[in-house]
Image (cartoon, rainbow, N blue to C red; front, side, top):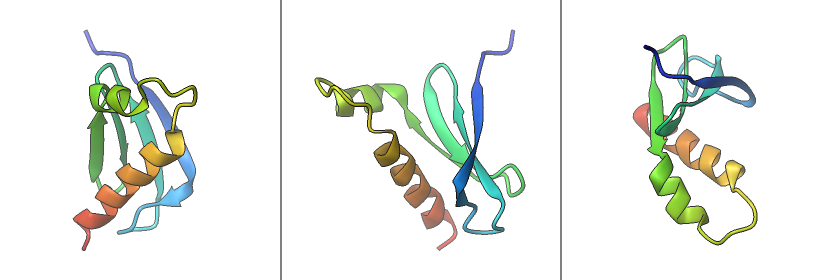
Length: 77
């Protein structure tokens, strides 16, 4: 059985390689961003995210996405 995943097209970030819109994917264990056209993806484990936000009343989505984008950008350097 295939696990559930949520996929959202990011309108504020494009692939550093080809310029296509990136997608944000959340599955049961990770949050990913990547390019469906190039096939490059980076991910962060949800346990790592949970450690970062422990005790915080606000979930830092912007920080998480920026960190993933920076990691994806580094692939093409």
